[in-house]
Image 1 (cartoon, rainbow, N blue to C red):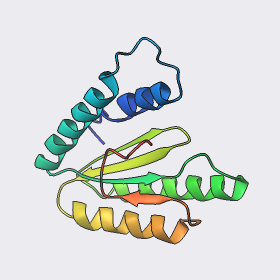
Image 2: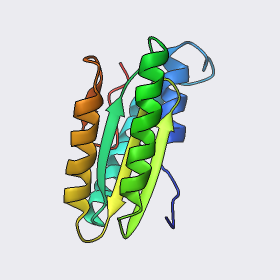
Image 3: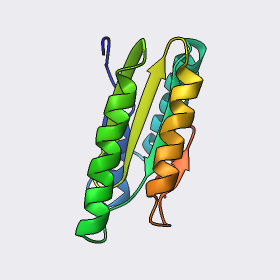
Image 4: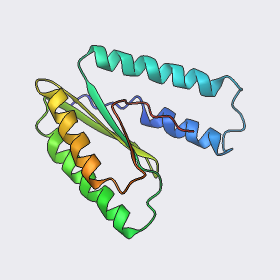
Length: 135
């Protein structure tokens, strides 16, 4: 991994905090503005050849699901070592995003999606995007 600045996790976490009522000092437009910023960042990364896969998992419902998430995260880290460039980002108890670039990036994302699909207890949402819906 190199150049692993994550433009997504911080703002997504801030938006979740606002949604939970923890950002009283925000103007009404800020939530939408930050989503616009995130979409521009995602488009820029796509133009650079970076590919994203996001697993929206929510808070684990039990220890079994927590273990599934840990195992999937470890498997995605292993996959990321095959990429020319990679980054993992997350918002705690909400989602994790794998980003990869270089030859074979699409195949690595497909493999990561397959792993997530097989581990999915039924309520996870798997997206080929860096910016999940937070609602």
